[in-house]
Image (cartoon, rainbow, N blue to C red; front, side, top):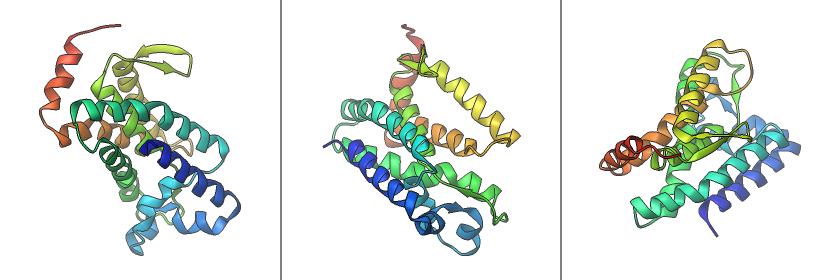
Length: 205
């Protein structure tokens, strides 16, 4: 069984359990004040296994399912050996790293809480864009646009909405998760930056 399917099952089971057991949500949600002042670092990871409702869970798991196969395939091709573990490393490290800025920004706000795998899912999506920047992505699940165009629009939108702070969506985590997804392949093998640049220079659609 593919590692991203195992992740989907684990996240889904834990999230569903938390729907009816509020103590799990209270204990593991990303409360920035508790992380900084009470040193409850487990929240940095475990909040990514919680979701607020079925729609939140289903959207994240659908995107993880859709892009997980591609990223594992790219890892097998460009970084042969232990591709499943590499994907697991990408996803698991993306959860806390995508949330660090939010924790710092809200470190003195005891009312700030966040849950969801969105930051890590963004990392997976953008890792796929790194390896094939012109592969089409369905914008709003309907309009095909090149992945790199989607990526630029996504980063601009996430940065803009994070500044406005007009909703309860973790735009900061989306933004930094996406950035990490682009950097992860280069961190794994710096020579892959040339692969990315060469693919950008050869437009295809």
